[in-house]
Length: 187
Image (cartoon, rainbow, N blue to C red; front, side):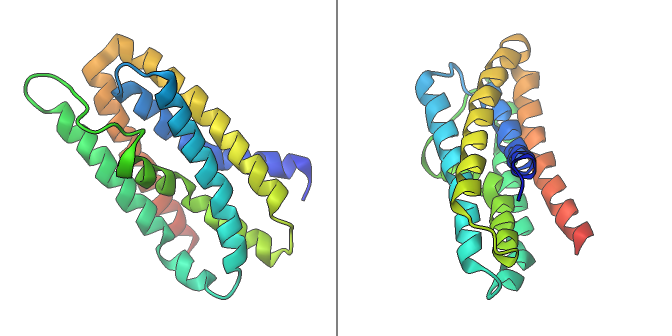
């Protein structure tokens, strides 16, 4: 695999993490260094781990993973996006009842944005490509894109508040729908 191919794969995989990070940046007020670090670290870590897991799973169970990975990502992103939209409709203004950069919500977001990386790891196993260097690059790129995304999201939300919050929830729903449609069309 060439360096250009690896960079293209890493950037492609990081786009979901970037979009989710922008949505998180629009919903959390104020965003602190701790929020940025936790989200970027976890997204990068999961983007690193998933190709390794996929590579180790290899061809033995790839049929089973491919059968539901898109549904898992769709379900998690729909759940989180729906929760954000529900909170945007709450009377008395917008407040985030749960910090999306911590707890189970962070785990769900990390898994949802890295499911595609699992499939990349499976592909690399089939092509007999060593996994550690590509996984490290994928994780680092996702970490960087996430940090930039959450920072961009904070700048957007300062101007539009409620609309930005709703946009963040809708963005998560569309990301989940895109993952589902992409996988169903490829099947």
